[in-house]
Image (cartoon, rainbow over all chains, first blue to last red; front, side, top):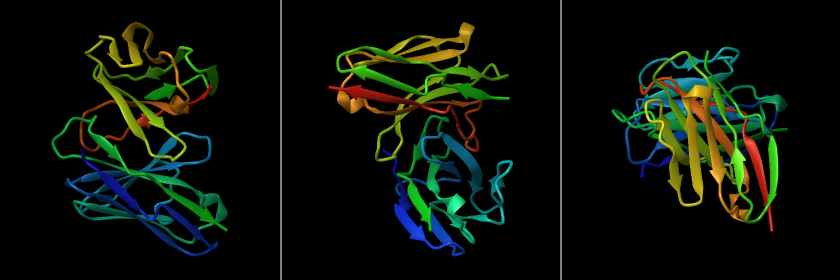
Length: 117
Length: 116
């Protein structure tokens, strides 16, 4: 089946630095990718919808200047957490959908655990 | 507005017990899609089932079964003869369209602990 990868799986960074997380669809093309954030023992909250070749659509309350999303190709979307702070520590999960398939064919990456010290 | 409610935060059972995880949803659309995902401690989401609003048939897959009732806006999930490996967080999710640009809206999840 379709596979979505994320890199890195874990990252620890110092407060004030920026971190880039990559989301790749390995064997299919994805015009749309989604970024979710999950705090400990909480649900997945949609942060933004990443569209290939155009600007991302951010959910209410998500700072677009802090969480930069770039979807430069049909197989890669990146999320950059700029000037990270401890409150940004979370589990970030991306997902991608195959073109032309029903909504159920949404594949999730394994997640990236970000810890900001 | 769309919303998914999983009222049970945590459930603890002993192996071989049956357990039902509740999911209640809200949507204004007549066409929508419901999902269940399993999230083990590793964090990776595992897809369990998708159901569209026009298919109210219950489904059984091994020890798993799902009861979809539009009249009560519920999509409950039952694990029969639970096993320790079933311990995980289970999420119910909703999507109002089948368009590529539509994300899933998740409930808060139910943590299932199965002890031996």
